[in-house]
Length: 384
Image (cartoon, rainbow, N blue to C red; front, side, top):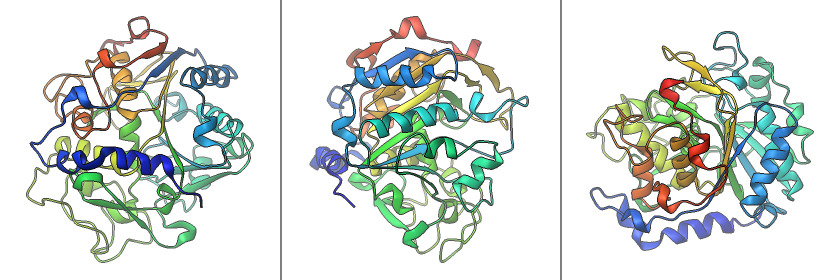
């Protein structure tokens, strides 16, 4: 396993300031939060144009040869809920999952840029599948499309410890907002580069789904699921991550308890904080957001009044907060909004929390947008 200079430099960059940022109400000035460009492009359909469009966007962002050549790249895909649940009978990739064509295109381009090993990761919440391949086959995906897209491609269901047979502990710089550390599959630590590959959509708990919210799927349900063991992780997936949502119980004794058991049990308070913790503990080097076809109103078919929408967009960036801020604006929302204002009517803003702990800026005035201007690409999701 090669050293991880990207992650090490990121953590060092937080420095001494980060040690105090998580201690509310100590806050980082928004003007001091880092920024990075975000690329936006039109892409009308899931076909060969996905590869060419993403290739152009990656070039706009400076290319990724230096970032990934000879490295192990972990890609967290966004496939939530059941492998069989669909909206109006439509394939999940055309509604609430990242589309397999976007996965294949990203894998191909990472391989072309020189990645030595590419690992697709996910920890499904509603499945007894032991492998990620089995889960995706249930959804009528073809995992072989990914393994053929580049050399050295692997898939892993990160609900389980995997070949290491032991979970690892990801510590949150500065002490964390909800937990000091999270016990996870080693694949999230044993990588040089981490990619969040997600969907442009709203979320019933956090307002939006983006690159950071995709990281909420990192913790295994065998430890943070409602059916996890009391002393040790369960051997089977433990259902939804209720410990991170409502906090009705603590993780197994083998993992760390939350920082403050007396803190609010409100999911609108807890989930944004867990999301920011995870985005800090496992830094995101590249965010790719599939907005070609998606949904408005929620994150999955279990949300009432969820509906299809076709923005025809792809979004990519090197900073998860700036990328999510631009994605929020493209959905017709103000990334500077906070609790009580759309899309954060019933939750704290993940963008604000991430900005305050120094992960990135949400201020569009400080974000360079490459390619398509925001004003020419905005889709008002609430009116779609």
